[in-house]
Length: 575
Image 1 (cartoon, rainbow, N blue to C red):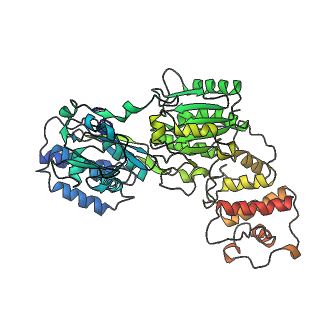
Image 2: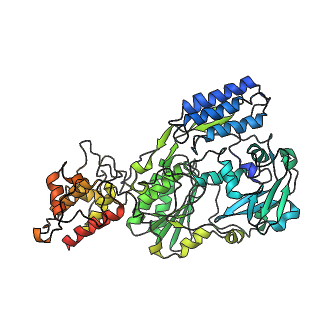
Image 3: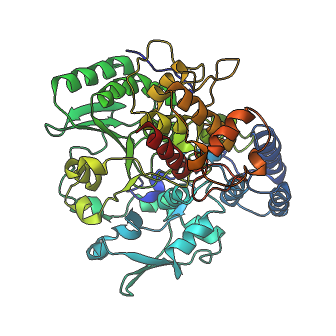
């Protein structure tokens, strides 16, 4: 049955080849007037004119200060330095989706090395042939500073709204000599010192791209013993059984393939799941940098039906999970599935819905956010999270030893983990939403059978909520009535007064007898609850002792754990 509704729609294999933040510059050097025009365009037309709130993270005074500094050197700096200036100004927005971008690397210089991160450590992943024995050794310092300090310094250039995305940007540009010089980490033209665990150090001279293309390089990829069957494929999406119990889906871009629509792909997945006897499905978003979040919904519908039949859904996330894929990951949690892996590069709430731009003289290309996506007002799973990297429910990092052995650490764990470990984290201190509290009351009532037809319970129901049967039951019983426009606002944090009313309506719907005066808890009703909407019901529930969790602070909203305590008190009456 359909119950879903769409709601939003190199050089040498080294790091430099992946430096997507480096734009294509104009063929001829620019003069100061042209640079000023580009700088003004970026500031006035892009950051101030197109971005919904460019000063959300940095006051405009700081933007103007940096802009004035740039204006003071327009006559003397190189085009490369001007480009880095543009990056610096843009990064002040603190928005991972707003950046200058492109692909012409000819004017940059690089050091012949690269890094890879596994777990919490950085390792040497490419070097000169004479240093090949140093591959896979931990790198502790760059330019004499701890790696984390260098990453922090790069935060002035790389647009990011969380440390994971910044870390990813650093890794892609960790060998760009011009960046080290611009940040004052290395003197112009001087070598970079790469310090390894145990004190051994490499001294690397900067080279231009033409010379870089002629160098021989030893790479960590030469040491890897094959690839796991879950390695990233050059496909938008594909699926296959891994074992008789585990089914695997890889979703690499939030776009629809021309040769296989998502509807048809979802139908193939449904056919496989019906033919097999799987107890878990792994939906891999680790290679997905975004696109349109609504593309996946036909597949989610299939997975919802599988979950209704007892299948565990586990979303796999990592550093590259970003933008629309990040939204899809939170939707997996909204469905009741768990997320496993490492922190995502995308933030739960974030600026997005990007539009592209090009500067008039340098032809620097880029993208700018057009709206703020506040997921914690839309999904219970995002409640209270804000602009933070999406963390998995189950942390399982990719290990270096497994990488070298051609193993996928996360999938290997998922294949053998007990079913009770494949569950969302409780987040007891998170804000309690209206939808979640209805879900708690529904469980206290014994989760009675309920039919969800083609029409969803409320106009703002999405159809993927784990608590959707509870909301349907609550509406049917007159517990959740919604507004005049047919909305319920399930993801909105619940107030104590609303919780009391829902408790009272549930007791009435179940024909419960509230405790008599002798059994009721003592104490006057708090001033915060003494007057207002549905006062008779609120007072009755207070006097019955059903609204007094042990750690109540009626000046604040409820937490998930407090909701569970209220629902447990109701369950005792039912029993």
